[in-house]
Length: 306
Length: 86
Image (cartoon, each protein chain N blue to C red):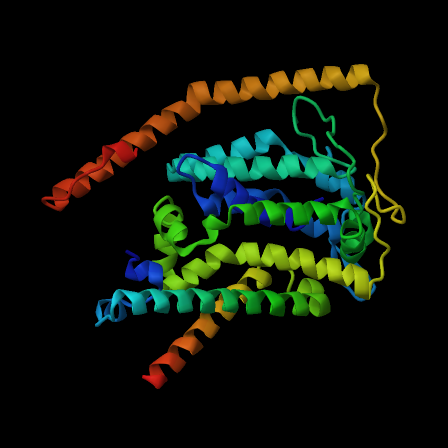
């Protein structure tokens, strides 16, 4: 699994998305699959007692049967569509979808990978770049991850987020991020947040993600003294989970079924449901702008914004 | 032009008397430097506490909340110090 990459990739997506999108939705989308699954992967440890721990963590976390469906493309579509139905916000729909899909694709890089095309196939897709070691417990997993290419993966995302440093500026936040998402105005009203606090909240997951990667890396080096192994599939010293290999024929057949199934589902969902909601959301927005223009004489509406 | 909301100032502060453009630029530069310093201090504190406290602070709730609290409190402290100097 990836650790800090999921916080850091949200800023990269925010920077490279050319349409209006909610940053908060991207962030929630990036964290969602693990939010719903992580606790039983490690369990709650009180002394020698381990509560709520899954008997086979990788199977529970990424597999089927298990909650591995949370790490699939269609789960992202389903959650984003439900939120779209209830909020009517295009920005939240797109943000959740992009964030969750980024998480699914990022987790492909460990030795267990994700069932990207579930439910059409339970085939796992993995590059095996670093060891999946959640069965070692939280600290064992941290030591393994930050002693392998997984840690480098976090630092790569940190560098990628920094290449778009403009997204951290005050003017970008107040001119691009806040206007795209009414949730910021709600947060400001509900919690009486000052502009400084709003800006700090927006930047907080970047600072946290960067510090989390550095802290765990330092902990693994100087406290846990875990040997660093930057070879593909490392570290060598951990008992990593590797799924049984399949023949190329069944791999390709599963992939073909999966790609067609997911693409067709996305197309049908858009054709018969989402496009209608999208149109309705646009009409509602034009209605709100027009109502504002009527309420405030002389105020110009901006239908082009839509 | 940076709006009061963007600059983090109150409306009163923003509409108050301002100096010439050069001193305004200098003040903005100083404020942005101070802001960067605050975030770096928050980051260093979080890294050091993270090595010691591990998951007690390095989690999705406490970690970001620590950053927000650190920035808001330190910023407020600097603001009060500035006001006291006037």
